[in-house]
Length: 473
Image 1 (cartoon, rainbow, N blue to C red):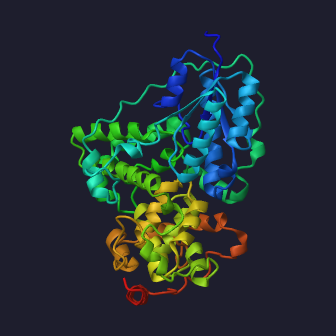
Image 2: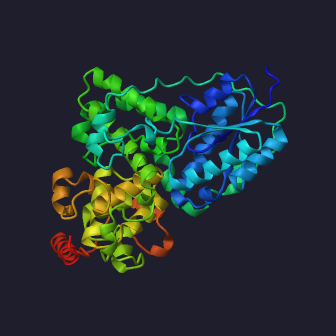
Image 3: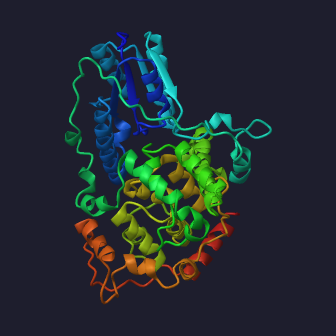
């Protein structure tokens, strides 16, 4: 074993051993490695569900590291200060990490890299969270892509790096620095009683993610085009939960999808397009970071959305009590599983921003609190796409009719019956579990009558179109 100073491996959204460029580079150096996870202000600011899911992911990854002869040091504080203290405690002369692309992470990481290098510490960042670095994908004129389709055409034939193998052993430090206790972080506190309800729906860690990918690429991917829009069917990969925490890499997903495509799986290309849609979201948040906080299209700054999250209509939307079954089923699925079918996401987002004329930021924040697969780039782009204020957005005049959409995608009402208990003689366990997951303060019960529509599809569409016309859209 080399007696060279150890390397600090700063982990964030890269909770895996395989296809981990920063880890592979550290192992290849022959030096001892000190993996560290830091609970900083960004972790503390996470919503209830993603913070809880992060804690579970960190615990699972710590166990995986221990099986390789390593471990995980946990610290709380500003990352720079924590890393500097660990450098003093371990004698480390290098810090490696995987790049992130949201504006807060970029600013933080740039400061850390500059400071450490000025202090004589090797500070290296690596790819791995994306297929393509955002600055490496350019239009013919040298700019960034504002529309998805040409970006897809630009990258679809690019070589994607072959995934790296997981190390068999990770050399530990001679003496482990002190670590905080994960359970004392109480990352599950805000989930309250909902944690027990949501937990069975989670697939934690790298091994589960790989199993999920294998199952999908050997099965449901063939019918992906037809079934991915059917909310009652398990027709998607479900990998967003694992991709957001880096429990699997996009490279691994791409190569599995490409193998299925070459084997003739009809839905494989569409799956690959969805991976690039994720890339598009990160491409945008990197090049136009304001997408996370402000209207991407400045013209929408003059639109008079309701911004009161306490408005009765918004509260009904949050509680799945709008009287619109497709909307309510989606919102209840979110509370019970921590996720929502993508078709339902489009419907509930359209209803909030167009039928209820409420700001997309309200929905963005609610999803940020409730989604176990929350992703900063995908969440921001998805909400602005639905509202019409974002890049490559659904046209402002396209207002999804949640009733006709339900007739098309859930004609026999399997999805709505699965999640809405009111009015059913024998409600499903999934529908009833919603009432065990929600805050008691909502005072809802399955024997309440199902509400009438707070805003009908026809009324909502007309209100939206009139509002757009008034504002000159």
